[in-house]
Length: 113
View (cartoon, rainbow, N blue to C red):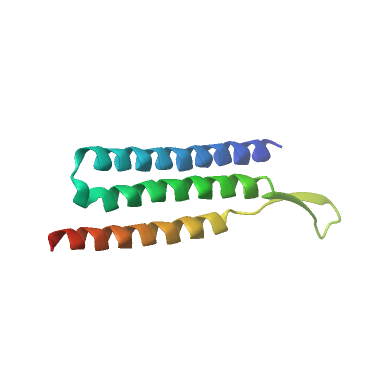
């Protein structure tokens, strides 16, 4: 039972990390949109969209987190609690991050011309 409580505490910590990341992306987008000139609006919009994507991944992880704990009958005939990692959410967030960084690079290179 103690192990289950520790796993749930870690899950809450990760959910908080996703929300903090999204809030920082929204804050940076707001700074870019308010302080810089119109040529930087694409970068600000990119960070705002990335923040929304992180919130959606957080919601997806919360939805799947409720199904991460499942019971399985072991070879000894007893019920065992098992934990399934959230690898899908990590893969989606990695793909979103790579896409956002590639877009940021493209937008930055476009500024020079």
